[in-house]
Length: 284
Image 1 (cartoon, helix red, strand yellow):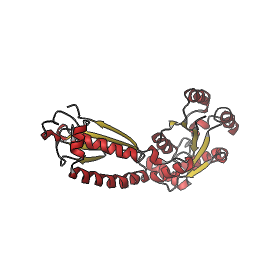
Image 2: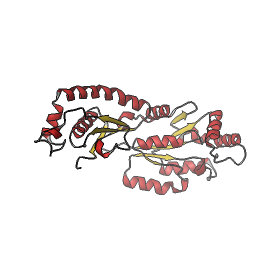
Image 3: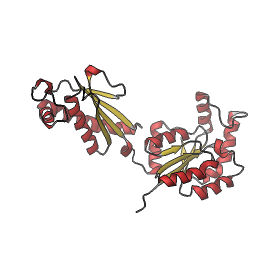
Image 4: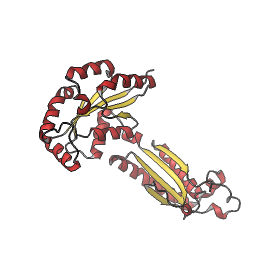
């Protein structure tokens, strides 16, 4: 059975959000290339086919398109090499584009005279490509979170399936993880280090796990964690986040934090999230 491909051309007006859209798609697992000249598309298309890459987004803007004399040039290349690529066209109101260029102080690709004239020229030049678009996205009043929601709807993507959670255990005596978004301190849980028969083992050992997880205080804490993360992760997704790094800390990073990090990683996977667990200080 042939696997479905998701191939898109991301194009439209300069300043309308094409680059931001490509960054979002990259977070969702797409192979993205921005500002690809039409002249290299034949070779690019062969390369994508040879590697059977199913999720591809090509950014085409006025810098690459304007070097060709007519709309027919684009049509010929598209029909021959990009037949299965659907066009998503980004645009925004003139006032919104003017304000964005004023705030960013970036130069419009066609701004050899006034900015307003450049925007008008570009809009005129791209109007035929706009007519070919499967979706037209007006970003005049969209936030980044709104843009993610619109893209997900256009491409029939469920953002939560692309949300990644990293859970790491660590020891406070070795310092906080610098890349953590959320830090949870589990030093209040019963410490296996004070049990002679458990001290030399780590949190991956079944006896250590049972010692920590079967404690009533741990059970109450994990129940709270379930409720906390079940509500929090969907809120992160709605706000447009694509990943979160959660750090679980105990004194040495070998027992309690390892047990809780493993438990939390399993919980996230059961909820359908991409979850990765690693233990920073387990061998120290």
